[in-house]
Length: 160
Image 1 (cartoon, rainbow, N blue to C red):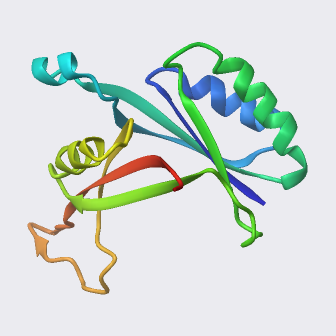
Image 2 (cartoon, rainbow, N blue to C red):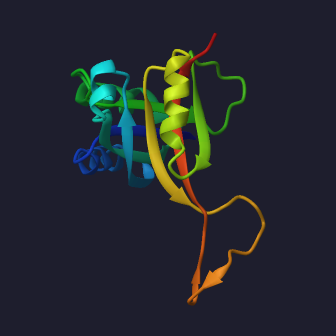
């Protein structure tokens, strides 16, 4: 079993969801994020955030090569997206990259991205979420549960 993530410019997610479903993937979902690629000029202008969609899915190991060939064909151009998969079955599989997830308080994600880029990371995707891994009941205000908002930073880092 493989777990795939495809990070794309906003508006391209539906097409990739269909591609994945048509090729045997299941549990296909899509959510919004923000991309951040290093560019000094864009950073200075404060327009270094790009709207992204993250498509995730599960698929059988047998379909990996066929599915990635089709994804590579769609992602041929520069800055069209990135796709990666991890095995849910094998522990001995080696890859050239690792996926780093950083979960931090809301509005701290950009700080984490800038620190990573200062240390050699090339890009990242920022996702906004809420909730806590702690086993604590959320406080209630006006009949609504108050959950802490978080930033989730996703980065692919080359193994050294």
